[in-house]
Amino acid sequence: MRKSLLLLTTMALALLLAAGVALAQAPTQHINQTLPVDFNVDDEACSGELIHFFTGEVHSVFHLTLDDAGNVQHLASQHTFANAKGTGDVSGGQYTLLSKVTNTVNSNLGGFPIVTTETASGTLIGQGQLPDSTFHQVLHFTIHEDGTVTAEVVQSRFECSEGSQ
Image 1 (cartoon, rainbow, N blue to C red):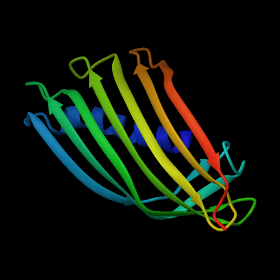
Image 2 (image 1 turned 90 degrees about the vertical axis):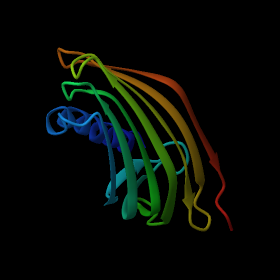
Image 3 (image 1 turned 180 degrees about the vertical axis):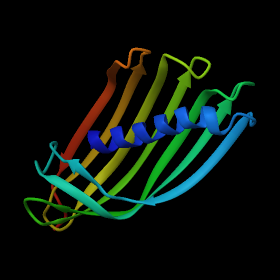
């Protein structure tokens, strides 16, 4: 799950950096996009297997606030997964992901540091007797001018329950 969260964070940060150049005249910008899913989730909390999600979509909404020079001051994004289905690499079993991820990014006049807070919650539903897992994470990242990234896990909760019969 952490890899998919990192992917969404990276996507948001890339948009943040690109928007400072591409949207120099606009004080605010709203972007909607829907993309197919293709990522892995390491379900260490329950099944202990890697689950490859390759069916479904992630709908992302970005809201950017720019300064007069076109630098991104604030970025808020939300990513919602729809019909995300995956296969366990060990069991071959089918899983469904119900998840929502929100990001808030603040930057200093388009420069550094870039500070982001990410909240993710969701449920992995295993088919049949495969276990289900729920998760909730709050992460805080800071990207410094020298390229170093510091991260703090503010809250992390993973729970496992037996699959349906």
